[in-house]
Length: 122
Image 1: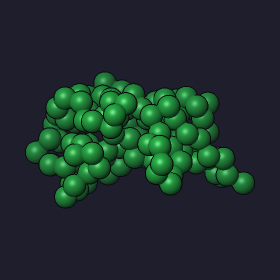
Image 2: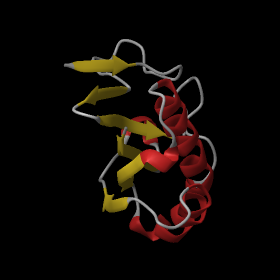
Image 3: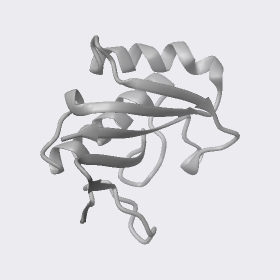
Image 4: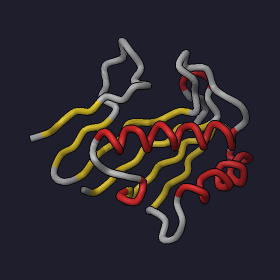
């Protein structure tokens, strides 16, 4: 059995769920550092903070928290932004951090600099 969750910032008209819970895991779709109009906000550090805010909101709707995250994927438009992304990331994920993959993507939706998806364990 699976349960779908949609967050307040869910992109209307796009066929996806903000998260799906199945088998004791919560799979959170990619989150962006965008405003309510899907416009990127600020630099990569600010966008990372906002993307993590959105991630936290989705997890809260699933009765989970950032402490329950076991795996993260960070998609960066430019790997030169790695240090800036990590400044914001470290504030939200103190040790021990979740397992993580960071990948450079040729392009992200909305012209965003960062997208973050996650898996959390309930």
